[in-house]
Length: 318
Image (cartoon, rainbow, N blue to C red; front, side):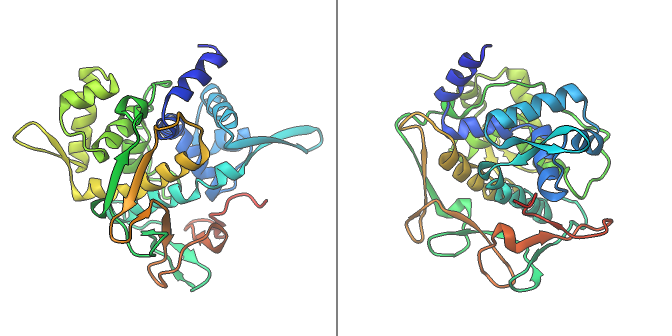
């Protein structure tokens, strides 16, 4: 597929569909997590930290540059070299990554995860999703979604570009590899299915029709979601989100917000999500459990056990 054809295909997707196509990949998420948490900027840095093949890494970094999430910057190290720096668009993804960490903390059997320290109050933040309008906690149950006239499920379902990345022998990784979240968000078919579930899709035939997904692939992903405790299969053949699945709305909210602010899309393809208690449009914020104040990128840091220093979640200094 030519570059023009790829741009045309992306333009036909909603902003959310484009975001899922960009971010619904394990390697992309791991690259971004290491960029934020460990300030990795170089090709060799990611290659050595992740054990990723050079061809796969090169392809993912090229995509992230093409989508305006990274930019190449020259520096001198005896000779001119290049590093990858997060752009403003890329830096705005920090809330999505913190939301993934928070969901893993609350719902995955991960043991102890690195705490997120809030500088303003000096306590562990333990972030939770709040409404930017009223500053009250927000969940999937107290929101209402109104699709635009062109916000069909087919515009949300992302095209498949990479083979599914599997890490069955992955060692425990308190920094970047969140296995439950990666199972949901790190695969384009899975993210499309979850998006459909949040939009009210319940039945096998409707998921298949909306995504254009092969029955065998859909069966596999639904089985994985049931095993993960995200879907509850009902006697009538439908699949309902469990409390664990509904809680992933925190991640979904930040993905939707980032997508619809950062990515161009056809008019009428957006989702209008409203916080029903106050009537405000979706404006998700992370709130600190200790002081109830909004968390800002430059005011928090992860404290990573096993490392000599705490690492700023703000990522590379600008």
